[in-house]
Length: 319
Ligand code: XMP
Image 1 (cartoon, rainbow, N blue to C red):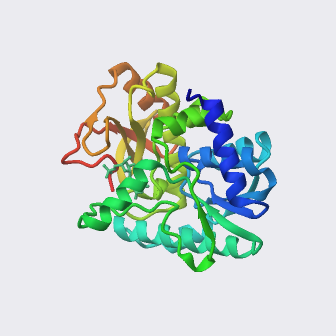
Image 2 (image 1 turned 120 degrees about the vertical axis):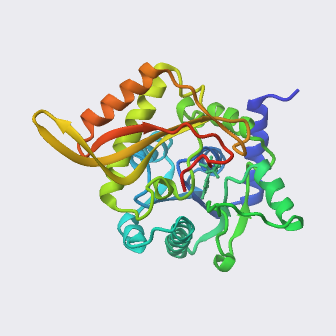
């Protein structure tokens, strides 16, 4: 009979047998797959695991702190926290083309990760949170002509110059099984059932040129939106929801004065497969609350709009 505790025992035994007493590194992004992979590897090999967590300056509010709290503090995982945000910001300065931004973010990630990995020559394995749908997808793209609307940069795609053996403990699992496994391993429900977050992070949610000032405003606005979605029960009813920073200023009034500040857009969609999506019909009262909170609490933003575009033709992300 198949049960989760039994599955965990088997997976742990298999990892131990594969790895022996060698050391493993894992790129921890804060996303579901790498988080569950980290928790499973921690269970299996404890101290032989080192996670590399790269802060690219494009993470959500308090994300680095939350990852460190959860993994390093609660689970006792060894986490190498690399704050590379200044390097990412300086590489992105002056660049406004979405694909060029993706390429830079992907390339910098590889640089940083590789440098960290080189400082751990004792490591023999590179673990990745590859799940079964990723396996099928990459098998398919070898036969089909790769059709790229947006290039997706995830932790994959690391060059093999590190000469590490690949460890993929989740490669037989579907997404919902990965989530169940995460919960069974003691990860918080909210972390395991989080909406997907793109590899380039806020880099594709700040339209045009990325600046730290914009990222800071966006982080705060986004946290308010997510907070209100969770409080109203709408987070679970939407597949993905976030705020987009528009590099546009509009006029407003505050007291007796005139303001001239930034505009943000709220995006919330319902979808099965992320290939097509409907905009979520959020209650007006919820939209009003989010808008009021963002405008009152985030100085520098004086206008909030709601995106009512379906995919296709609009993509879920704005870039
Ligand atoms: P779009 O915007 O193409 O997004 O409708 C579909 C899904 O893919 C995510 N997405 C990305 N994920 N790297 C990623 O890892 C990327 O460059 C990227 N672009 C879009 C998006 O968040 C949505 O879930």
